[in-house]
Amino acid sequence: MMDALPPRQLSAPPAPARPARFETWIALPLRLAWRQLRFEKARLLAAIAGVLFACVLVFMQLGFRSALFDSATALLSAMRAELFLINPLTTASFRPEPIPRIRAHQALALPEVAQSVPVYMAQASWRNPVDGSRRAIQLIGFDVEARAMQFTGLEALTDSLKRADAVAFDRRSRPEFGPVADLLREGGGSLRVQVANRLVDVVGLVDIGPSFGADGNLVLSETNFRRLLPDRLPSNTDLVAIRLAPGADVAAAQRRLREILPPDVTVLTQAELVAWERRYWEEATPIGFIFGFGSVMGLIVGMVIVYQILFSDVANHLREYATLKAIGYSDGRLSRVVLGAAMLLAVLGFVPGALLSWYLYGVVGEATFLPLAMDIGRLLGVFGMIFGMCAAAGLLAMRKLRDADPADMF
Amino acid sequence: MPMPVEISGLRYAYGQGELRRPVLRGVDLSVAPGEILLLTGPSGSGKTTLLTLIGALRAMQEGSARVLGVELNGADEKTRVALRRRIGFIFQNHNLLGFLTARQNVAMALETDAALPERERLRRAGELLAAVGLAEHADKLPAKLSGGQRQRVAVARALAADPGLVLADEPTAALDRQSGFEVVHLLRDLAKSRGVPILMVTHDPRILDIADRVVAMEDGRITA
Ligand SMILES: Nc1ncnc2c1ncn2[C@@H]1O[C@H](COP(=O)(O)OP(=O)(O)O)[C@@H](O)[C@H]1O
Ligand SMILES: [Mg+2]
Image (cartoon, rainbow over all chains, first blue to last red; front, side):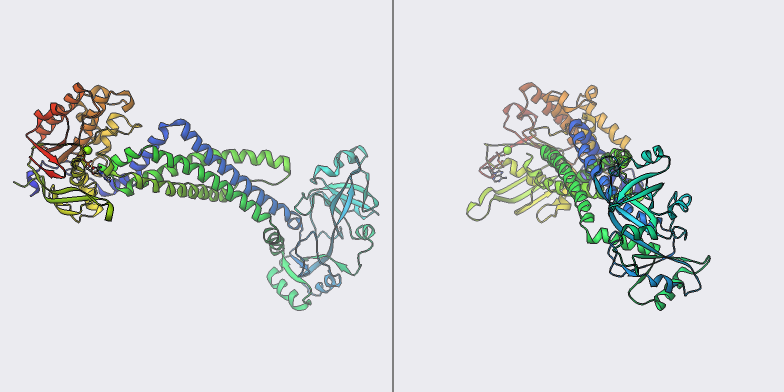
């Protein structure tokens, strides 16, 4: 009965189904979205700026977060031992619960344990040699000859650190401790500083880096540590670093140590120790939450901006959208146009946002001494978030399409 | 011969309950193949409502309407969207997309046909624009065209997908006398050469001469 109508020429040329499907599903809606976005340059720039802003905010928050966690564990990562003993009640290394020093000797009972070194950790106040201000500094005391701990520069100082009241200063400590490196050079390799109400000699520099719990570090021998803090019980230590004989099985040694040692110490590998410390900063402090919150706020602000732009694009073109519905565009297809616009904004904002963040990582990292670094995982993660943010904005704006009623067109 | 449009006993009311207001009170109407039918009548008599029902832009309530072989009573959204692709619409306002050129606007009507390649779409759009006398303006944005030219782009868009029926609601209302005259004559010539029937609502007595048949509506009924 349709043959009385004019021939339907359009359905005549058969086309390969797949490309055509791709075209109507993605390519054409995306192209329409792009043409609409491109038409109003100022609006497009505003939208891109919104996405870029969200992007930079998220990158910075995540960068700070992981830099702080990394630096919080820098000290533990720098230790050169396979296994560690700590008090199970210790929450973070800057305030350790003591363990009996005798555990270090007991560990030596295992033939595969080559060295077992007690490590003392405490904070004491350091007086800035230039302006006299005081600031807490982290003390790390251990047998410097044992080589269980490895910091850059330490090896050359082994002998001088054995002298009474000798300390090594962490050159990457925050500048508030004073220009120690310069003063040391001027003083010909020696500098007197007041630490915990006692005068000590800075005999050299090591590389550790400030961490969350400590703005600066001092390395010193076990004997000098006791001199500085005479109140501490000599029978207690804070951490035991265990070095195994070359080729020893770490997991097996860990198991055997657990068997022979009383339950007042936990035996951890270095990775477990770092994770233990990290978990404290992530879970027991609001730091993880703060940066997560910052990221979420960035995403919400970005979403609101993108939503506003997409919404007004639809609202200002309701008649045109209704016309498209009238000439046979399905709701789904028009929804893909709006979503396509959101996706385009995600990409257009992310690319400059990632580049700017990369640049800022360098600038801010230098100013704050935090190890800010871009990595592929974070790039992909943030792109996912920005994409999701734009998609959510697009889905919200899409609802406005319902107001485009083709029946109102005549 | 089957009729492109066959309507019987069509009733339609806006609103619910107390506010319910019947607008169409039993309309019988058919459009023959290739016929140009003009629908006149006072404002508020239900002409636009009738056109939106025939154009599958609105869900039906009562009666029967077969348009291009499709029964619209009880038709779902999918069926209606598919039918709309086979109808050319011309509105009072041109409703062209402001960010697309005339050619792109016309090609838009062809994009619902997945089988047609882009090159072919643009070629056909160019052909139609030439047919409405706008070959030279094909790559201009609507803002750069006069009112009459825009409405001619709308005519080209309505005819682009080779529709089986053209529906137009007061297409000259926003135009001056001369351009209005030009537009409807163009529309008639193009439709006649393709054998496409037209159902056009108009108030404009000056264009009644293009019609094969004129029917009048009053208070929701066809009177003549
Ligand atoms: N969307 C609507 N909702 C409620 N009433 C409507 C709507 N559209 C039209 N009407 C009413 O229906 C009647 C017929 O309108 P319409 O079909 O537009 O007539 P015409 O096109 O002949 O002027 C008018 O009284 C109008 O006010
Ligand atoms: Mg009307």
